[in-house]
Image 1 (cartoon, helix red, strand yellow):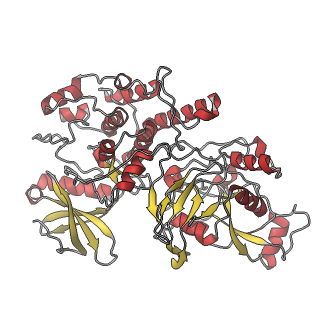
Image 2 (tube, rainbow, N blue to C red):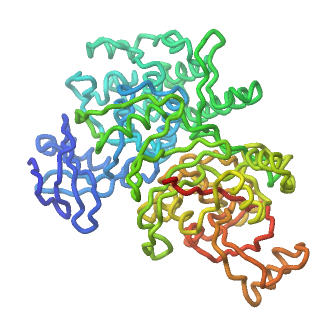
Image 3 (tube, rainbow, N blue to C red):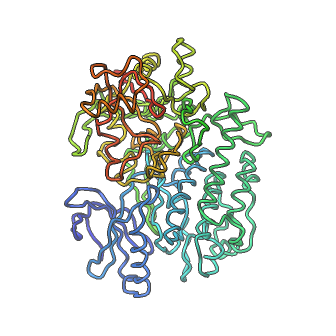
Length: 616
């Protein structure tokens, strides 16, 4: 049965067709109760009539229903409609990595980081004993926030890649199939890792390792032929990356990476090692992925990695440096910003809709212009500033607090990360402002802590910025829909430097301001939950009664003169690496005004970030 626009399917209204392929058709639908736009995949009738295939499809649906990961497009529910199997899935706006690679050359470091996000999704799914079986760039959707979503997770498909077709029961896309898939034998998680290896090969070289247009020839190559080393295709590829890819493409599963996490860690370690080598070699080189000595290509400045594991300093008070200018994603943001409407959901065996886009490669700025809601003037989505990169928070109604009440907030910029140690030391050296305790002993890229409200305010003035208000800070953290956490409505401790329990809080340490990229807010700001509390420009009432005595005797006994109930207090937001709250209370960290701090107090877990008005 085919559905037409306007048809009702259960509680959903069909509003468009997203695509169709060998095993299903996908529609854009609206939930008639919530008005949320979703995607509906319908297993084609001739397949639904095959009991074996239908049973396997149902088993996959049950497995997918258990998956909840920021890099996996979610399955919401499944139902039967007139003997047809129907799945309701997350509708993801973005562009596939396959289409992106056709629009522009993907930056080498970007390609690695995108694959690291895919491996993070697979690590989680494989732990749930779910295997994808059709990993390829066309099933990797990149959103405007830089998040990669793995699509069609675990759904077996008839292969249609570059218009290649085949018959039989072998599942997968010929260009990306593992030798085990080609042989038609039972596969495990390592089959997905082989396909990830080919995807990474394609993203960083621009070509497939096996390029025959004949399906049988491709299948033989997957089983027998050694892939050309990526470094032979592009001499600019670092030798370490070349070895990682070749290991992933071993014909023998036992010689590959054995887990997605092992694969991801190898790539993350490469990125971290390259960053360390660059920083030691030359400050100007920082932010570029090292290339072999023979290349004459100029270095490109890059932003911090999505996947660099949190560093653990020797001192809890260790502090940071401002992030490198945001220009690495120039190809993606330029392409995405020029596409007026991209509403793609990648599903099994779907021919993606063609779309028209005028794109440009930004000359070392990578910023995308958007229109100001207040003035309709063009605004840059990113600002790369010496005092710290900033991201645009578009104005409108902010849904704040536990009840998500609407508060109007004008468009503004906010720092992508907490102000770093290096940035604050630059300010101190330029102005003679006193250094915070132990700041000169801490890592450059850690958040500056042990700063008073007045220290933070002084830095902002020097930088031509200001402190954000509580409402602005909360909107930057919760996005336009008022979600509970920067990444969504479900708590995920792997996305923030936040302790899981009281025991963990006792041993936790500060992390780099540029870690936890996957936990960034809808506007692209990092570490708004956890790591360091952040001053906001909202006056707070002093605590009263026994709570004030606790402040005097437990929390701030060393203040000179002693703490007074009449002195200024200000709010802080976001929690910290050493601050534990029960799970049901963690959403309060983004909105609860219950943690006032004396403006002159210094704490080892309190820092700040700046905001800036939009220039009219």
